[in-house]
Length: 211
Ligand SMILES: Cc1cc2nc3c(=O)[nH]c(=O)nc-3n(C[C@H](O)[C@H](O)[C@H](O)COP(=O)(O)O)c2cc1C
Image (cartoon, rainbow, N blue to C red; front, side, top):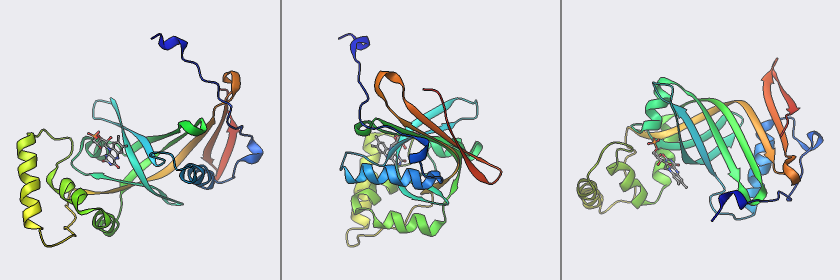
């Protein structure tokens, strides 16, 4: 199959500066709500990019769990590679692609850990099996499958009679405080609509950029 022959026409919608909310968080919420209402798979999946000690970027999918004026929250393992990157350099970018809408949102900012209470609350709201797996796994570190399964079995036994586990010290959330946004709407003939929001002089500056 010749990949060069794959061509999509982006016909879904258009985006004009007059349609955009003056606050990018509201604009993001609006697009998010449309994605949620459409019942597409993984509406809250986003690609998170971090940078390591040698300035190499690394990206992976995470799930967005909250959006508000303070930032975007996601949860992970504080012993993972991404957490090690964040420890050195808290500047990250997030990319959301809603292919069913021909939409992309890019967000730059910096992250910090959420309050411990927020992590505990979310951890303990997860299904017991997920709590067990997260407790057994030291994400991104080398592991033997047998060792992992043994740990899961031990935890299942230990917490046989309870549905809520203590949230591991090295598990929790990060909140991304926003610096810059880009909203992208695919358009016919590659004349896509792209708008940047940059925080300047204590207000959001919004402008169109070339496709
Ligand atoms: C659909 C999807 C959702 C995911 N959600 C999360 C998540 O919310 N948190 C997380 O730590 N990893 C999540 N992952 C796994 C990450 O992509 C990644 O494998 C893991 O976090 C380890 O990344 P790191 O080694 O770069 O730290 C998800 C993967 C996929 C494909």
